Image (cartoon, rainbow, N blue to C red; front, side):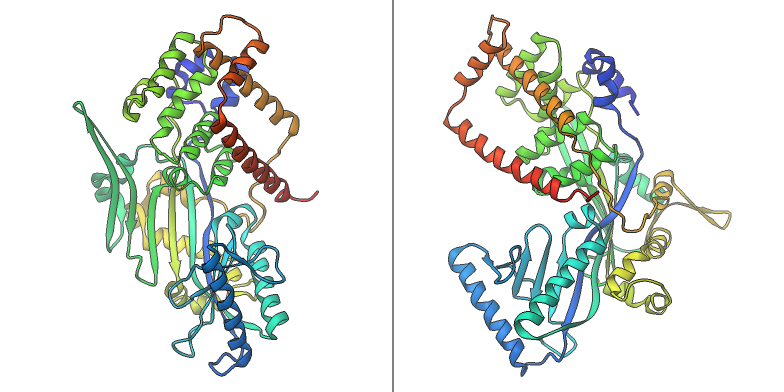
Length: 477
């Protein structure tokens, strides 16, 4: 889709015909679903305060944790290349074995009662989205079993879900005031319980703007269900550690190449407001009007407020498509009330995998009884359009979701063209009269200082790791 905002922009009219679809097309009103977090507990067989093997394990892990504290650096776990002892803790679980960016295995030094599990596992969103829950849960279980058995002749039993987050990312909500404002909620929201909202309010020179970035329903402290809708774009940019979501949104055509370019620029700055600066930068990189490019460059150099940048950018380049996350945070109490139903389900012997295999049943219930948007008349529920679309999202088992074609030739050509555009932009700004690439390269090198060289090394190292991981996670043919 290429909407009116895009077609009316200056950059669209300046683009070559074959570039217009490539740079600006996306699929509107789209939803994608996956699992955002999984927490589960494990008990150790014959666990007790008198178990000498467990005592030895705890002593070994505590000594490693002391080393991590003293050195301010995670301590590698003996026998594992990707597991480390860290200083993190969670409630009574004061020892943590971590696989960075993938999962944490928390272990309790003591148990308040015999019903408390010794181990708590948290699996993070990246492996869940990129690899699938079956693969990552198997990896965790294999590592836990190997660690317990090989070093201490212990075994784990009784897997229980602690928390499972069902996430739906969408580009449907571009105007948060329209869909999360009080009037809309009063008319369409069906829910009983606590709610809260967080937003942004800006007033400058008589202009006023408002946005709602976060709506929650229910209590996070309750061990049942917590629902929230929030601006995922803002979270990814400001927290600066989930850039893989930008890859997914682009792959699924939820955002255009233009949107992706702006997201990556703002992501580096960890500033949501810098999306507006990114829009100006995009025109400086790819636009044709040299006078306008100089004007926009000067605005950025003079640190014009982001609100002013936004007003200037409108009409020159499109607005950036936003992504909102609609999430159900489900906890143990919710599933405990469904035990009879769960016992009749087919699936894995591992309880958490069984729940995830059959999550369609739980999500159907959550989206039609716990909370729903629409009206009730003629003795039927009539969902609003965006809620219908959410409920219609297909569940394709646990197949690999993201398979990107990293064509070396295509990527190389795009990178070279991007460098050439940047080089030409710098030459224009520096008022270079000659029209040859050698002179422009000399101008570029003359502008490089020691800080640039240091930053370049950091960027190259990060890019190297990024592409190595992408190749590693590609499915084998």
